Length: 95
Image (cartoon, rainbow, N blue to C red; front, side, top):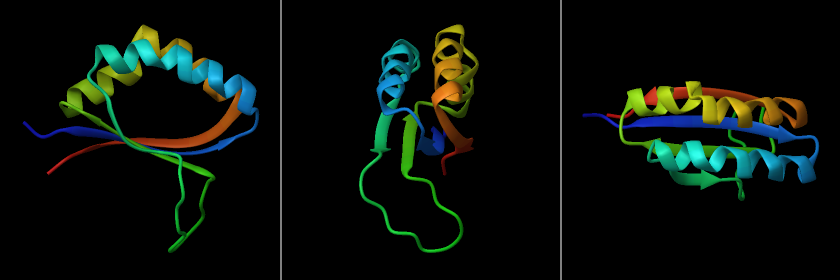
């Protein structure tokens, strides 16, 4: 079974409140087997628009990745994130 990946590009407007998002999201990530492959850090723009924070999260399957996002646990966290950051997020299936 192919793994699933969240790819998120984020500009954080309120770093202190973003910590609340990180804490609130943790139970969902643990429940759905998330493994962080990239979480912020240095990056190099090659083409197109960029955001300050880039995140790649691996899940055991595409279904787990989608279920994590849609879970009640993550939706609590998402509400916080949407108040304090601007983001684009996609879920992709691994090869």
